[in-house]
Image (cartoon, rainbow, N blue to C red):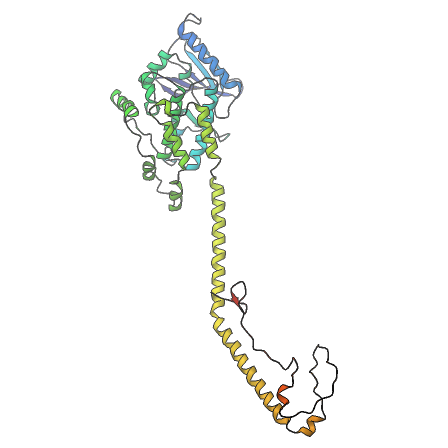
Length: 417
């Protein structure tokens, strides 16, 4: 149904099986002339194919399914038939109209999916050897990232060495791969380059052109040069159409993720993660402690709402505080008027009680208001000397209102600041 991709390591064609099932067929460039175990190339091919079959024994959602393998009827070219994944690869997702960098959230998602794919392959002894942007696809049907193209995995060591030297994606290759070696740690290094590219918008050592000189410069850079500052590159490639808030948020790359990338990109294979299993454990355990964006947004919105509520409460108390002087003045005025009125009443009573004839024949009765009356006693003669000691009723005793501060810092129920 047409070529999907061609290159020095083989060509990939879109195929159709029985019914509506589509597949991707990878043709390897080196022919095998005899289908018997005496042919070393055929023997190596068969051994690697057997390893690939183990990958499918326990399918992974992040590894392409191998449907078939063998030799073509004409030309005796080895082929691998894989399921066809509908969707863009990472190389497409970094080109317009997409952003030149991935968001932190999407990078973490890919880190988890790709680490899971490598762990799945490494557990059965399969080294991919060719991890690069266009060998990882986003499956639009499932939302998963899928590791594709196990072409190098089924090549012999000699074929692999020759293929990498002349046609390999040197931007993603580990230093030891330039000497023809392919280790589990080589896949780990390429994994680190992938994450670096997604966050920085470029690989550490880009290939300027496809000349042999340019390829050699990139190879030498992987071996000798330090990796450029990822965060500085990311800062310079933030999309202009992102809001300032989003730009600030997207510069907050988790420390654990930067540490994983740094360990993956060590020059010495022994200083990297040993294999995909160790890598996946590190990524998955760190990722569990990180809030996803929805959770972070929920927390932030909750804090904003609480902040607004507190601000409104402060404004309300400030308005109440402005009326405080008037309330206090009113209370003081009331106390003064009440004291003045009481003095007038007492002076009036003192004047009227000088007529002893009228006072002697009357007994002093307490004012009745929801209280029990005291037993009636005979009134003692009232004289000017005893008039000051006569107890007045509770109703006649008026205490000035006092101000008392409550536990809430309020005086007479008025907020105080």
